[in-house]
Length: 143
Image (cartoon, rainbow, N blue to C red; front, top):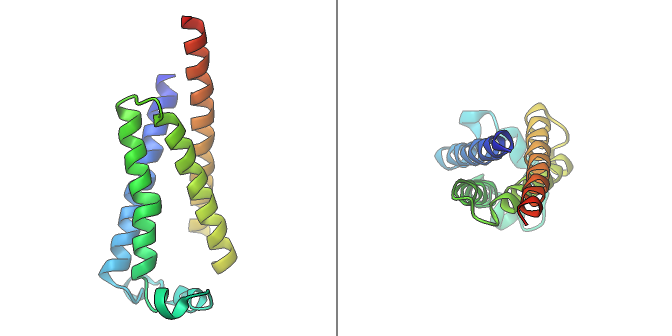
C-alpha cells in the first residue's frame, strides 16, 4: 500500500507542477509564439465565446492553473495528510485530466503530448482506484 500511496502522491505532484508550468508558459507569452503554440490558437478561436476567451492563451492558462494545477495540489496535500478524501481526490484528478485531454482531442486532434497526458490521467485514476480498494480492505480487516 505504501507504493500505491507513493505513486498517487507522485501523480498529484507531477501533474500539478506540469499544469503550473503550462499555465506559466501561457502567461509569459499569451501569443504562444515563444513556445511554438501559435498554431493552436486558430483552432481555439473556432470555439463558442472565442471573441472573449480565445484571443490569446490567458484564459486557457487560467483554466489549466485551476482545473489541473490547484486540484492536484489540493489532492497531494490531502493524500500527504492521509485525509479520508485524499485517495478519492486523486481519482477525481485523474478523471478530470482524462476529460481535459479528450476535450483537447476534439479541438486539436491527437498529438504526442496529449496522448502522454491521457496515459498519466489513466494511471492516476487507476492507481487511486486500486489504492482505495486496498484501503477499504485494510479497514475491513481492522474491524
